[in-house]
Length: 180
Image (cartoon, rainbow, N blue to C red; front, side, top):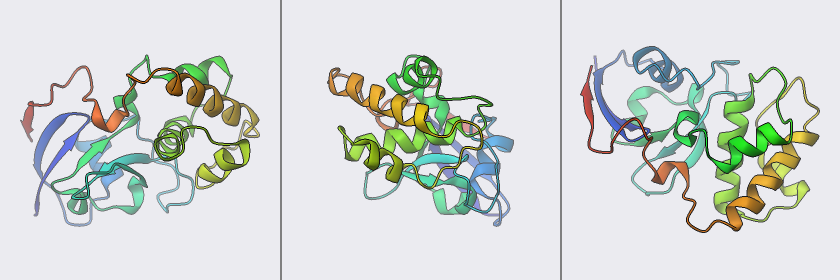
């Protein structure tokens, strides 16, 4: 089995994994990162969206069901847990009633944070385009768009707010190493 070393939400993990293990299953089953949702397992719904930072140093939203765990070797991964309870995106989703069943919410929030990293002041049309790879069966998207707009405004007004990929999770110091 290949050995994988990956930094997830600020903690470094080394593990032997079967070569065909999807990143979503590695995160959930090996590391307990259950906020990353298994939806379709085909890359269509976006519920499993995480941020993956590799050699280019730029975190990008990826559907973790379309990435093998071995492809993430040496990379940094940020899951929805990295947002913590005080992130503007989480507050906005709550305050704008942008969730109903909550199944799509982790992927929506991670895709939205990625969108705002590249475009801190998107129009509603740009928000919809930026989230087009994430499906919601409950909300009709209007409140999700409102939430992203509200989070964008708060993040623009708080220059000290960093993106989750740059901020280790509060429970896992950056120098933590776990060998599984």
